[in-house]
Image 1: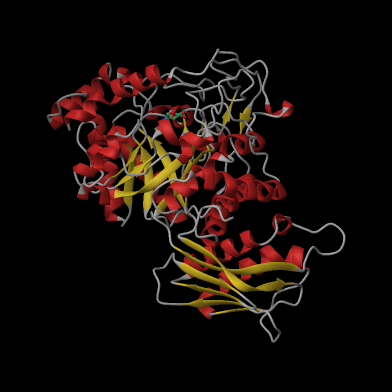
Image 2: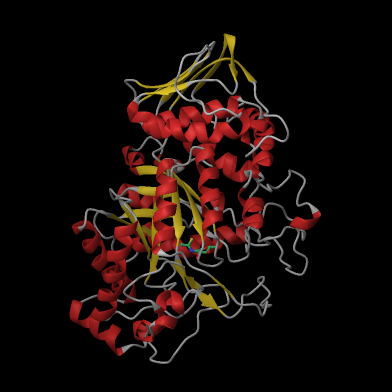
Length: 536
Ligand code: TNX
């Protein structure tokens, strides 16, 4: 009962006994995976799983397989053969899932829980997609470093390998930049927050940020779990927190506060050389901290009112011979594409970067339905399918008033499980090869705690993991069975997931009203937003 479902999973004769004396031996290239597995198991076996003689050995070995693939054989011994450390890590994750849910506890109550008996098993496994991501929005509501590390463990448990950290937005700047200390001194704090979509405010300050040491720790912790942390610095919209810290970045010349309400704001960056230089300096520090080959520079939801009124923006448009503000936005993003390319990184932007010409080499994170994914792939750009209508885990999970984040259309567990990363229009088209994978998203306008993140992300994230890891095709009944075995693991870890029949009393949020959006109206809105993508 493994989640996500492996390529092949069969019963074999015999069984394995894991106890406090079980030796674990690993190829030197896999020693970090071995250390990780020892660390996960020791609290409940009571042993250290050191290499040594003994019956019933766990061995991690390298074999002639792709890097993320593995074969796991459980008999009198356990053998994990993998193409590389990532594959060995996934094999070890699968092995943990063959143990009782109690093995996911951090400590056994009373005497150690082991020995565990594992029935004979053979698993052959490899991911379907290379990009298996989840976005976590720590800008709208800050999450502590500890919560982020815990979230990384939960991604790794589901064999996801990308954490897209949305670090900056109108409502907060969450990463220390040495050269510009006001970004966090001012930009990381807001006076209060909007509590729902009815405009009510909570009157309570909110904030927080990660120091550069915190970021290094998060990146290293994730790397050990084969998760790449992809940073997002959102530009040129979603930048009010930065403008509050450094007003010269904006268009108004009057001071602004870090934004306390949600929605798409009018305050965007100006297009002066100094502003571009400012953000290239910011990126110098970001690149030093994040080894990720990909860097997300947003590019989404940039309102154009201030540019239309700005003599500087109008002059830019004229000098460069651009058609309009859409092309100006595209030009702005291009400045950073060249910058990143020179430094060996690839720019990722939301599908709005397709409007007004796509920066060469850029990767598109397609979020407004799937039209952007189709357009980008057909024009030869790599794509990550982040479709809001299937993968936005901030959308409500049921129609009732009791749902604690009453936003968006209803997006059930079954809806997420039904998601297919390759858009229908691309099936059978060689352009489908440009789909790197998919990514779910936990936007946090209305999600103000880890407990609430748990409720929104789980178990829908488990369903998402099957769509990107497991072979194509769906088996809802089989998934339900696997999930029934998986939920006790989440419970043992302490994840406050949503139960099938809705929120428990303390998971509701009375006083934050909201009716579910009508799916047809919602789709019509997305169609209107993206109609210009049809003509690309
Ligand atoms: C759209 S996805 C956004 C986010 C919001 C989210 C809420 C994207 C590029 N922009 O800023 O948080 O919807 O679901």
